[in-house]
Length: 202
Image 1: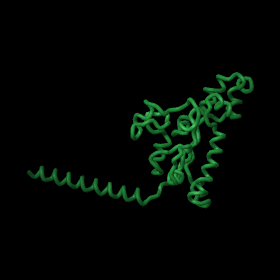
Image 2 (image 1 turned 180 degrees about the vertical axis):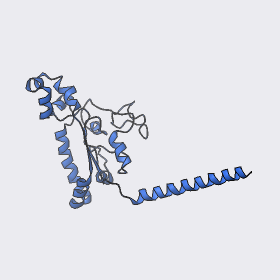
Image 3 (image 1 turned 90 degrees about the horizontal axis):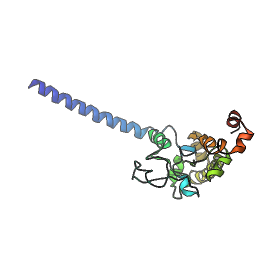
Image 4 (image 1 turned 45 degrees about the vertical axis):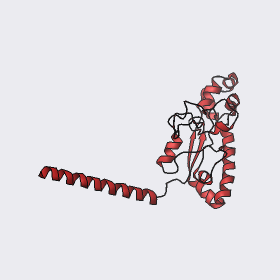
């Protein structure tokens, strides 16, 4: 009998500690602002959260089985069954649950404030790579970023926009396609460079 009472008391204490710990954690999460105010992403399919949906390219992930494990079980243009690394990072750092593509026509003000992805599946540092795949090269993603800054200025003002961008987490994931669709497939690049020279130039 005494053992049973002790067991019940221990269970109740553990339950109370768990509830209090959860409440404290929730309070800390609510009170502590995220370390980064926004996330900015450049690159290829590894970080393209759907920009290729809005351009004329064969490189698209807007059909099943893509998106099978994404919230809502719908393809979003991500070359994944679910979320991509930038989504997980943004969620882990409490910036946002998912990183939207910049070309999404219905971007909300909050989405602009907390960052977007400019990445385009099939792209690379070398503009010649994107001529093969008809996607957005990194150089054009930088132009898109400039357009994003103008939009952000309109939403929060220049000073606040400058702070957001200056403190944002920036992710760049690209370069593989330059070899897959360019250096080893297009003879002109191999006539101009060896592998080391190509890597240094690009």
